[in-house]
Image 1 (cartoon, rainbow, N blue to C red):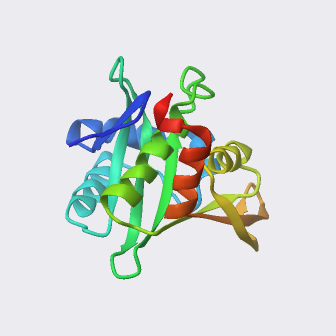
Image 2: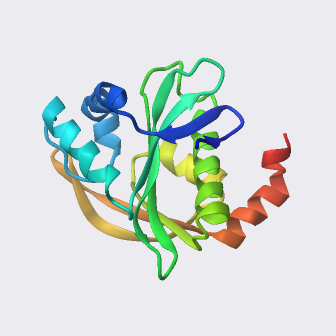
Length: 187
């Protein structure tokens, strides 16, 4: 099964995607924007990550591919899924290639992933953290209807200094309201 957006398709990660994912992880533009600590990643480490995530029922990660060309654009997913309270963490990483950015692929991928979380999995809440200087991620979340809940002051160390971490979330009803207001899936 794949998850269809208007421009992109979200599909399961396959072993042949591991080089792309490792390169995405190693990209200095991406690694500076993502929350969490990262070390240089070998293909063996990438394979271990892949095999561990395949067997984890609390994690759903997807390759983002362009529908018309099947080009790999990035990845998105849900993690730390709490099936009882029906919430999960979410995130996205797109290639820093200029042909990928500012084309609507990120918004479409996030809207498709959010629709899957709420309408297929029955989740109620999604949440994420964004480093304060990641303006592109803040804009994407805002366009998709996410709201800022708070700030964890000086929680991330990058480039020799501490930065705030902005906590954002969206509830199922808020997502449906965005879809109704914008007609997103009708366009």
